[in-house]
Image (cartoon, rainbow, N blue to C red; front, side, top):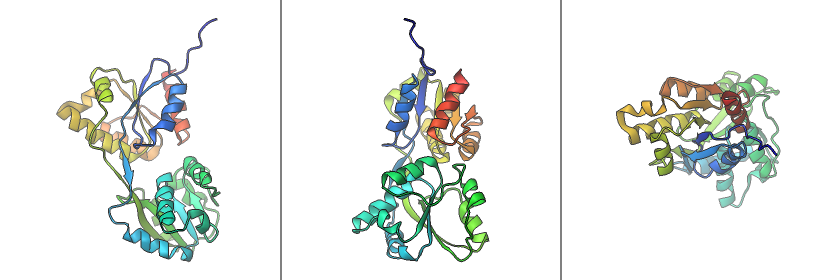
Length: 265
């Protein structure tokens, strides 16, 4: 019987997702035949100061909507709630929840909570464009990363008369180093592609590569293809690497897998 060749067989792929969050993505690329090298470009934890988060938790019942931009926002707000004998599940009975992204909605479902609104496309622009309710005078809470990010949702809601409170629920920091196996593979030109799932993974990867390989770090990537999960990530690839070879049509890891397979086929 002829052996079936998998679509990414013999391809060496680097995944830059946060430490502790690589395994799920690694599995779907392994199943497609790729050998995956880890390059965790984020370390996720609480923000430097949790007092503002605690103050918001005391006032959660005043918010009409909570908008989650990522699963980390859900994880760390809920973690803090649980420390105080509460839960996001309990709070969801009092206020509505919107999420940006299919995976964020899935993470919410795993906490036994169904999002009240998910935009048709999994990006911030889609949420504000298609939000199906009047927002004037409504109170919105946006738990987000400490170091900030895309302000489009906040600015749009404020311009339409909403009352918006953002709070740092977590921080994503740059790791100290790249795994030795990945450094060796990059040095020996074994890597076919690097996958990026956020602008911050792009910036941190660029920093780590420069730290390990010095002033000629970009030459390490001369034959490496760079794949992006969506428009904001693509912009950061252009800024930091001067190129991006393929952007996912659907802004999920499954979309990124499909883009990678299409490119190499």
